[in-house]
Image 1 (cartoon, rainbow over the protein chains, first blue to last red):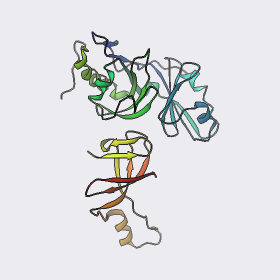
Image 2: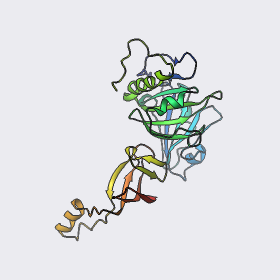
Image 3: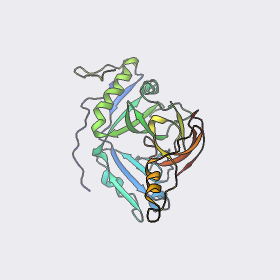
Image 4: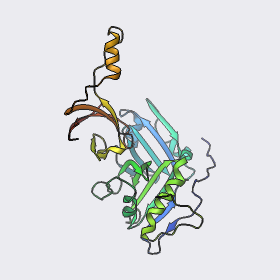
Length: 193
Length: 82
């Protein structure tokens, strides 16, 4: 499988508030492999997570139960071939590289949940979305797939949406973070409220 | 706002779902009359009370499921995957 050269819809580096309470970063290059498989297939057994949960495999890839009978595997950039090769394809199974079709961002920090809650109707409390939780829902009116993937003990969410909504979503999330000290890059136009 | 319990995703804002209408039985198109078919396509009882409805969880699991909803109070009981 050949790797495709990708161009992120967001051309800015990580944005961090002065107090470090929230960091917003483009994660578009993350390899994203979508697997759809029947529950009785070898692929379902190998992936080994149920809907709504995630786990890190031995290679460090994040395997997520995105929907019933559907998984998404997130890995380092340029690993689509290697990741796809690990999924058994016997039976009713499809394995698709959706890296280029999905924008992705990572938002981390103590204020990440508060910032996201401003533009999301999901309950992002630790009780309902603990570390490892996988879910879908609208964020800034954009349909997104979410993973709670804490890093270094800090709350962190990986959020992906269709690529064409990527910059819109990034700006909407950045706007929500301004209350917590994040500065918007010069030249960016926020969405009208 | 209505909170709709998806059997896969749990309670969700109805804005994340799409109502697909009352559950009605489909007549056999080979044997039913034109008026029965028209009734099936276009007419709904729409009572002020309990109805069984199909909903689509478009923002979450992307599955159809049925619930019982009181159209007068929006109270919801029972849920199952379609």
